[in-house]
Length: 237
Length: 375
Ligand SMILES: Nc1ncnc2c1ncn2[C@@H]1O[C@H](COP(=O)(O)OP(=O)(O)OP(=O)(O)O)[C@@H](O)[C@H]1O
Ligand SMILES: [Mg+2]
Image: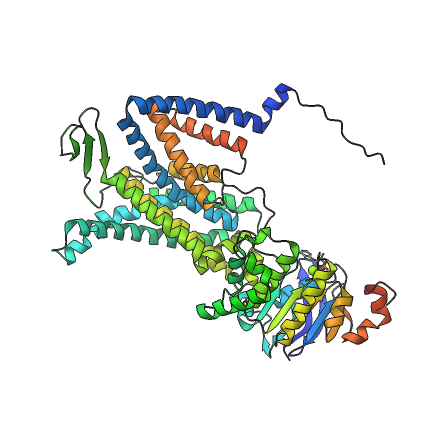
């Protein structure tokens, strides 16, 4: 198993944000976590990334317990997050943003090769490589955020609402890229509010509600589940 | 639909006059006019004297710049005005004082290689003293950060600010103890001999001991030269470090958004420590240069230069590295030129008035970014 999250309990002070979340991601899978605002999706990803600490429960990555591992060591092990709202370094150039993605890699030649690969995949970024990250459009920033994450050669990519604020065409494009990345061997944990899109590319899905997993199953099943249709797919699946 | 809109009158002349920006531009224009007129006259009257003043201003401006960088870098990364920074500068000066008078660090090459060219021996000796002070200050600042500031990183900002003031008092009064530096002025021995050149009617000459400076000539010493050269070297190194190295990029990323820097694998604590260390090392170098220029050390010597460097950092736009340098150079010139051509006792008042006027026009400082959302 690639990632195994067991009985995760996370608090913000007195607020109990995750109340025993359990799920897993197998090697090569795209797994999606869907849920409404405030369900605890970002909290889950940030706990996996080590930015938040679980009060109870455990996170195993390739069999190894990483519940108490520091964020930088988690990145080193191959779990990389594309955070909600892209979080581009606005005061760094596009190229520097990409270099930050490869921060832990000390092999200069390899970084250079990865850079070429990423810029080939996102030609828009090549055109804008010397611009400040803050001057990119929302879509370009999302591309940059994904490209930056790829620079660290992830084994497991965590994506937090990559479709947020993008036009339908751009969302299509981003989801194609995600599938493409997955086909090249990276496992993916995709957090989305756009349940339709997420489930259409995912292998399996989990529905999160106020800090609990309330439903899980193969993505195709969830797409036809009446409860999911009612709550997340606009009612008339 | 009927939208209710506040009814606005065109502001009257008096109202627009008291608006911050208008007032600022008016004052700025006025000051510039007076300055151009006064300095223009001075330049025409006695160009060599004017040049001398500008050099003096450059010298003190660079010392302020080295200190201001520490304020601005630390502010950029942890949003803390590190009021103990001026005292780190003082520790730098004292470290070099002890290194020179107690262990004769500046003479080590002469002791080991007696045949070495004395000039080269002096250069290496002075560099060794500067490097030692930089290292001691860096270590001190990293310790201060770990012990005093880090535990407060998620506390309200005012707590850390008050702690910084506390650390500042601690460094000063600990230094004032009799078994540390004592509370007295102590004469500072320079790590090299002063050479003064007279530039006058007879061209450039070395000023001999006891010789009078001929009227109309200007003097220039190796002290100014060393301060300016050392500062420029350090500034260039810093610029290169911050712009091009991996750690420099991590510093900028962390300053912009700490959480996301963590997601890239940056060890944020280590990066913050590095920032403190670099800022303090520059202040340490500034301490040595300052003591070389004004050869006296005393436990509170960091207060005024520290305050002025802080002002310089604000003037340039706190958080901005080029801003700190530009602000410091402006402050240095403002201070020396007003002392020379307007009034010596008024020089700080004039320098600070310039700060206020610039802030009226640009509240975030010359290079300051417009209010950025919290990183
Ligand atoms: N820093 C915080 N302090 C206190 N409570 C928080 C904090 N961050 C999140 N929460 C709370 O934790 C719960 C889960 O938040 P989380 O951000 O994980 O939701 P989400 O599923 O990602 O929502 P969205 O789709 O809006 O991004 C919410 O009730 C939220 O109010
Ligand atoms: Mg979220």
